[in-house]
Image 1 (cartoon, rainbow, N blue to C red):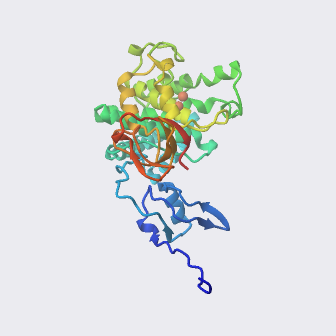
Image 2 (image 1 turned 90 degrees about the horizontal axis):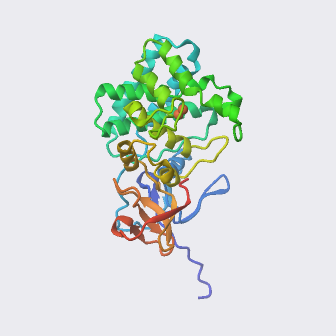
Image 3 (image 1 turned 45 degrees about the vertical axis):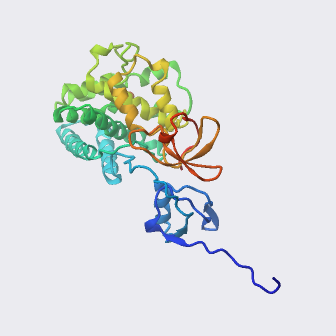
Length: 361
Ligand SMILES: [Fe+2]
Ligand SMILES: [Fe+2]
C-alpha cells in the first residue's frame, strides 16, 4: 500500500534473569560493534554468564517449546571459589616441594576435608568441566580435577571416610614429582625424545620419594603418587605392577588421570572432545588396563556431549544438544538443525549420536 510505513516485527525481549540454558536466540546480540552471538544460538550456561558479565539486560529468544529441556545436572563437582582455592593451595605446596613439612601436610589435609564435603553434595553430577586454557597452571588444575572426579567415583564405590581422605590427599599430590622435571621438558612444544620421556616417567618415583620424606603423609598417599601410571596388565610404569599389586585407590586416580590428560589442551596436542576421550578409555586397546568397576562408574559420570555441542545422529540428522537426561548422558535432548524441533534420544532407542561436529563454546 503506497504511503504505509514499513512495519518491523517486534520480538518480545526476555529479561536475562529468566533466560535458561537451552533457550534459542531470535536476534543477534552485538557487543563493541561486533556480533557476539548470532540468531539460532542455543544458549549455554557459559553464554548466559558472559551476557551477565557484559551487563546485557534482556535478549530476544525464540518461543520455548513445551518439550522439557532435560534434567538439571551439576557439571562440575566443585564450585568456582572452592576450585580456585584448591588450585592455589596445590600450587603453594607443589612449589615448595623441596621443603615439604607438617604445615603443608596440614594445609593439604584440611583442603582435602573441604573437597570431600563438597563433592559429597554433588549428587546429580554429569561432568563436563572446561578449563581455562592456562598452561602455566596445568599441573595444579589437573591435580584438582583428578581429585574431584576421583572423589566422586570413590563416593559412589561406597568408600569409607578414611579411604576418601586418603584418596583426596593422594589425588592432590599425585603429580608432585613433576616439579623435579626441568620446565623445558615439561612444557616442551612438540614430541619428547626418548631421553626426555625417560625423565618425565621418573615423576611417580620422585613424587613417592618426596612424600615419603614428609612424615605427615600416609604410605597410601605415597603409593598413589608412585602407582598412578601403572596399568593392571603390567605394562604401566615405573614398576610394571600387575592389577593385584596396585592399590585400589590408585586405580581410581589412574582412570581419571588419563581422562584429564587426554581432554586437556597441552603444548604438544589439542584438547580431545569429551566423546573421543571416553571412546579411547573404553577402546579395545585399553582392555585389561583399567579397573572395570571404576571404569563403569566413571562412564556414568562423564558427559560425552555437553550442552551446546552440535552433533550428528545415525542417519545424518544434525542438531544442538539442549538438554541432558540424568544417568543417560550419551542420549541427550537435541534441537534439530532442520526444522528446529526437539528430539529426546531416550525416546529414539534406534538412534545414536555418532559424531561431535562442534564443541560447546
Ligand atoms: Fe602423573
Ligand atoms: Fe597426573
